[in-house]
Length: 238
Image (cartoon, rainbow, N blue to C red; front, side, top):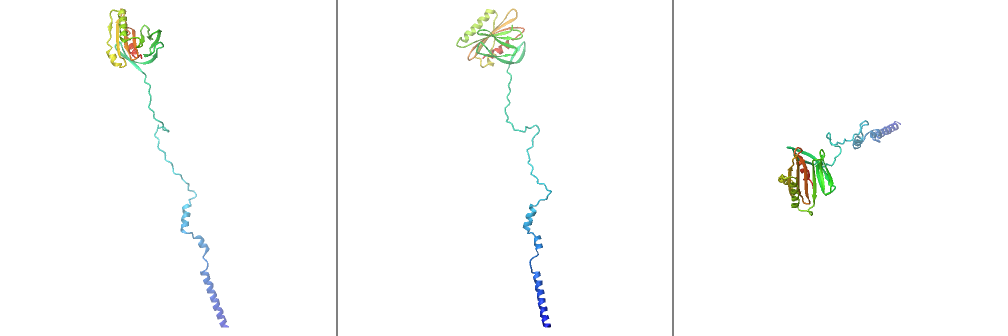
């Protein structure tokens, strides 16, 4: 009996021992495994995870600074174009004047002339125009334009001389060498003047261009002294 209890006790002891062994070497603790995260997975989680209140910022775009007064759009630079007013210079009563001129075209003959705005070009008879001084039309310039197939310059020069000697016996030839030097487009030029008893003056000038002959008859006075003004305008005929 005692032997039986001993055996049973041994068996129970053995069972208890086996049970204890089974408990220590059994399945792993699932709660611990669940809480353990592999290091790689944890790093990825931390990398992807952002704080809930953190705002995502977009890199700012830096624009070139614009100087004050600089145009917002690039524009093509064009050379500035200026319309300079044509002028003529003349002498009167010892003074030098420079005035703006305008261009007129003859309605009777094939030419243009640049003249001061205080003068007017008129066609009064066939083949002859008059440039009148607006303030006093007693001062004027008669204009005749001849083509080179009509006459020669020697004939024009002789005609001018004959007309002047018919007006007065006191006729002086003008020295127009400086005028010829200044106007390279004029081939040759000749002029005469006379002063009448009433202090009025008559001046006749003839010159040659490539395509024409021009005869000018200027009616002036000693006091007005518009001779050079008329001549400078007459030399622009072309």
